[in-house]
Image (tube, rainbow, N blue to C red; front, side):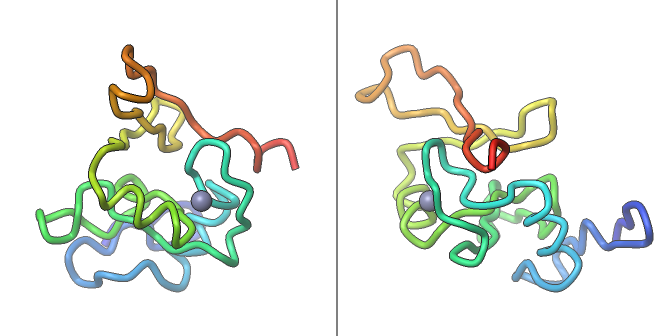
Length: 114
Ligand SMILES: [Zn+2]
């Protein structure tokens, strides 16, 4: 387990699959709502998504997480969008080539403005 500021667990590794408690609170504080570009869903509608999927050995940690609404969680699991962690510490989304041939990463800035 990795502890962040104030002893908040930010990485529970493989001990827990779900983002709960202080880890979910940290994820909500960072992404503030669905992290998918352009989505306005608030955090109440969202769940933690493993960027490296749990089934592929991904850990339950803030650096491997994106907050997604149910709809976008399903969209991401269809596998056409890729997610990577931007150096600023928030997830960014790489669109499939049929939507953007240059596949420029984008992130959701809506919740940052609210
Ligand atoms: Zn969404």
